[in-house]
Image (cartoon, rainbow over all chains, first blue to last red; front, side, top):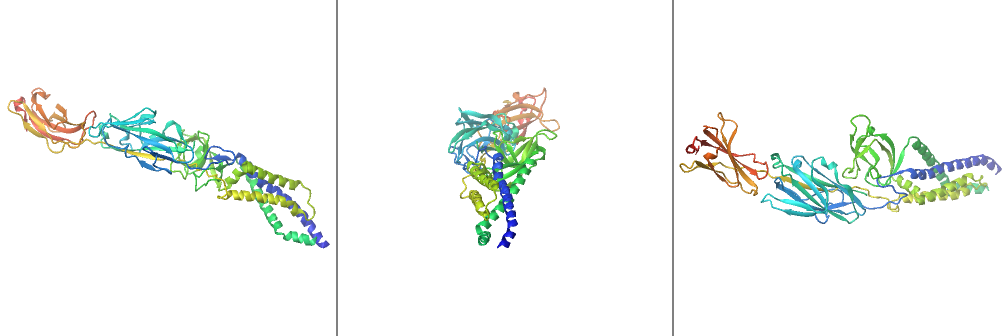
Length: 215
Length: 341
C-alpha cells in the first residue's frame, strides 16, 4: 500500500502538471475560433455580423409579357417575335420584355447587349426604354415595318451593338426587384436607314443578357 | 484508497476526459501556431457565405488568403476582391488584362464563380488582390458560430472554466478527475453543440445562394437581299420616225413595294471592257421602259453600240442587286438609227 503510494506520488505530480499544460493549450483551441471569427472577412455577400444569414434562391426570369421564361439558372430564350427577317434599311421592330424576380430574395440587375458577329451589327441600332409603350406599324409587303417605344425611361437610345458592346451595361444604376416583382422594358432594334449595300442578306444575333446579383 | 485510485484509473469517464484533454491540447497548440503564423504572414481568413464557388469551395468553408500584387495573379487563381458596393467577392479569375501598358500597374480581372454560368458583370480593377491558397470545408460555420453571440457565450464560458481550473490550487488527492469533470463536461458540451452545428439537418440555414443569374434573350436579325430580274432584256423597235425603242424585263415576284428596277444605258467602250459613259438611267417599279433617242446624253457625233443594264434596287437606300440583266442596242446619229440590235 505504502509502496504503491511512493511510486504513484511523482507520477501524480507529473500528471497534474500535464493536465495544467493541456488545459492551457486547450484554451488556445477555444479562443482561436473566437479571435479568428472577429476578424475573418465575409466573402461573397455583404458583410453581416454573426450568422444572420438568409436562405433563398436568386432567379431572374424573362418573357414577353409574363416573365415566364428562363426560370432557374441562366439559359437563352429565343424571342422570335422580336426577330426580324428581310429587314430593309430604316425598318425597325419593338417588343416588350418582362423581367421578373422568380427567386426568393431581392435581386438587382443590369442588362448588356452584344452580337454574335459583326456582319450586320454595325448597322443595327438598339433602343431600350423602361416602362415604354410598345408600338408598331407598317408591313413587310410595303417594306416599312416600324417599331416604337414611347414614354417611359430611356436606358439606351439608338446605340450600336457589336460583339464587344456587351462589356457596357445599362441602366447606369442597377434595377432592384423584390421577389415576384416585374419590370417591363420596351426593346427596339432598327436597321439604320443608311446601312450600306454590303449589309444585304447579312445576319446577326443580338443577345440581351440580364445580369442579376444580390443587391 | 488504493481501491479508489485503481478504480479511478480504470474509470471510463476519466479515460475519456484524458483523451479529450489530450486532443484539446494538440488542437489548441495547432490553433495557436496557426494563429501566430497567420499574424506573421498576414493571412486573411474568410468565411464563404455562398455556393457560387462550389464544388471546389462549398458554402461554409473557411478560406485563407494572402495579398499578392496584381501581376502575380494568373487566370485560374481564386481571388477575393471587394466590388464597388463594398461586397467582398471570392471567385475564380477567368480573364485578366493589364490596364497599364507596362510594369506592375493595375489589372482588370474578370471573375466567375465556378457554379455561375456567366462571369461577374463588373470587371475588377485591382493593384493587389487576396489570393486564396487554402480552404477548409465546414470550418467557416464553426468560425461563424464562434463569433456569434451563442458561440461567444459558450466559448467564453469554457475559457473561464479552463482558466479557473488552471489557477485553482492542486486538487485534493484523488480529486483531479472530479475537479476537471465540470470543465470536461462543459468542453464536451461545447464541442457537441459545435458538432451538431456542422450537421446539415440541425444547422440553421446558413447556405445563402448568392448565385448570380444571367438569362439571355436571343434575337436574330436578317437583312433583306435585293434580287435581280432573271431572264433577258426584251427590246421592241418603235414605229418609224418615233425615234424610240421599248425595253422590258421579267418581273421579280414577292418583293416589297420599296423594290424598284433601275435601267442604265451606257456607251459601249470602243474595245470592249467596262461601261464608262452613262447615256441615261431610269428608276421605276414597272417592267418596261420607253427610251427616246433624244434622252440619250451622247457625245457630239457619237454613234455605236449601247449597253443596257437592268438591276434591282430598294427605294431610299444604296442597295442594289449583285446580279443584273444586259443587252446591247444600236444608237445611231439620228433617231431613225436607234434600234434594237
